[in-house]
Length: 274
Ligand code: SF4
Ligand code: SF4
Ligand code: SF4
Image (cartoon, rainbow, N blue to C red; front, top):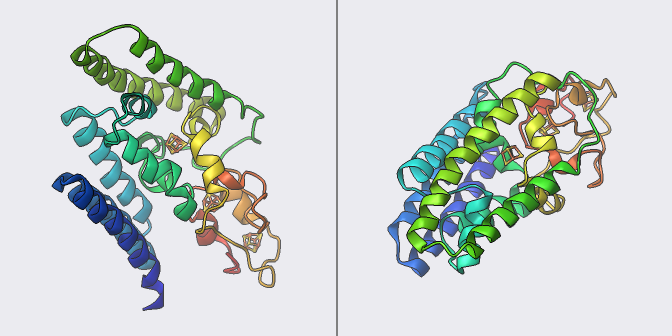
C-alpha cells in the first residue's frame, strides 16, 4: 500500500486547490478542472506503479489535449505565457494566471518540472518524435529562453498600449494562441530534427522555463541516487532526455532544474539505485 501514497498525495494536493478555488470563486469549473487534472496525473502514477510502459504518455494526452482543445480552442482561453501576461495586466486572477500559479510557479516547489513531463501540450506532440535520447552534447544556448520570455511580455504590453477595445483584445489573444502554438510546434519539430533531440525546444527556446527552472530548484519531489547501490555505469545519464546528472544528489547537479520526472533513468538503472 505504501507505493500508492504518492499518487494519493498528488491527487489530494490538486483536490485542495480545486475545492479552495471552487469555494472562494464560487465557480464549479475550478472544482471540475483541477479534479480532472489531478485525477489524470494520479492515474498515470498508478499505471506507472503497475508497470504500464506508456503511463506518462496517458497523462500527457489526457491533460494536454484537454488544455489545448477544450480550454484553448473551445473555451477561448489563451493558456500560453501571453495569456498569463494578458490576465495579469488586467488584474484578473483567472484562467492562465491560476494555471501558471499552480503548474509553473508555485506547484514546482512540490512537483518540480512535472508539468513538462506529464501535462504540457507542446511536449505531448514532441515526445512522439523519434529522438527520445539526445544524440549530441548539450549546447550553450541557455540565454534564448530569456529572449522569448521578454518577447512575449513586450508583445502583450504593446497590445495594451495599442488602445484596442476589450473585445478586439480578446480576439487578438485568441489568434495569438493559435499562431503561438503553430509556431511552437513548427520550431519544436524543426529543432528536434536538426539536433536529433525531441526536447531541444524545451532546452533552448521555451520561455516558460524562466519560471520553471528557479522554482523547481527547490522541488520536494526529485529523483535521488543511492550511492551504495550505484556502480557508475552511466546508463541513467545516457537515457535522460534532459541531460541531467542524476547520480549527483546535490540540488546544483548538472541540468538539475531540467528534470521532468519522466523516470527513464529509474526504469533503466540496472542496480535499482535511483
Ligand atoms: S519546457 Fe516548455 S515546451 Fe517543454 S514541456 Fe516545459 S512548458 Fe512545455
Ligand atoms: S544507471 Fe544506476 S548504477 Fe548506473 S550510473 Fe546510473 S544510478 Fe548508477
Ligand atoms: S531521465 Fe531521470 S533525471 Fe532525466 S529527466 Fe527523466 S527523471 Fe529526470
